[in-house]
Image 1 (cartoon, rainbow, N blue to C red):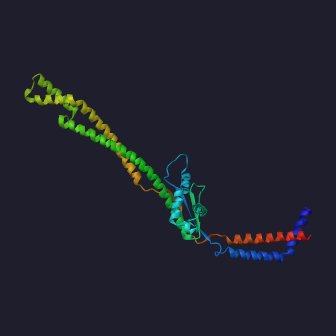
Image 2 (tube, rainbow, N blue to C red; image 1 turned 90 degrees about the vertical axis):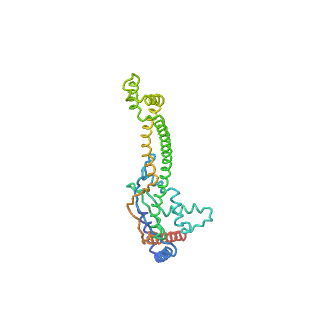
Image 3 (cartoon, rainbow, N blue to C red; image 1 turned 135 degrees about the vertical axis):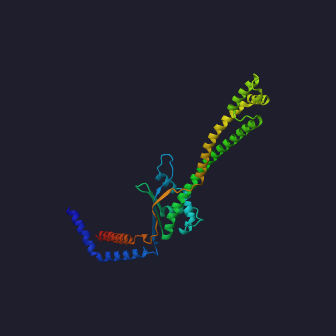
Length: 316
């Protein structure tokens, strides 16, 4: 303990002995750090942020809505849309002829655009930029592009489903038209309108004709002709009539599915609920000059003190 106390005492004595030097170094470092942390050398950055909740994303695999949203935010499509919309290559002063231009551009984007998941299962979007209005616009555009990209993807899936439903619906319509036409032809050509009723009446009329009863009230030729028609086409009529009823049920089902599929293709949905809206802030968030000045001054004084100690050791 005494050795430690002596060492501390010696260090303190050396610092006091060279206080003018250390003071000059500290002042010089403070002045230089103030100068070099000014807007002339370091452009100040401003921040705009928003918080959004996921909505209407549906269920895919075991991913939660916020996990899906974070995946979409990381998609290349959204990043490229933002980069192109605001011409960020020029804004970040990245030369397009550079072979690594895309790499540097995405690196700069990821540095200035930070999207993170909050503990409440929402997403926080933070954009920092030298232009406070651009930062604000970029936050809004990121949210708009998220909705746009997801909407386009959902529309692709809805179109695939629509085509499947449309094909089935058209198939049912064609089949229903075909069966209905055949049924109409039998009704027209063979005069079979209601098989059950007509079959019963023909049987009664035929029996009266056959036993000679009520000949004046029965048309022998018509009854015999209808009887022949029923015998020839009655089975087809029953089959087609039942088929029509089944097809009508199928038609109603697929018609409903067709209208739903059409609605899914045409509907415009949003996939975010805005909890905290972005705003234009003219309060810079970078650089933090007092921190730079403090660290630079402390570092310069400490380094100068180390050099002084080294010189003391050489003299001994």
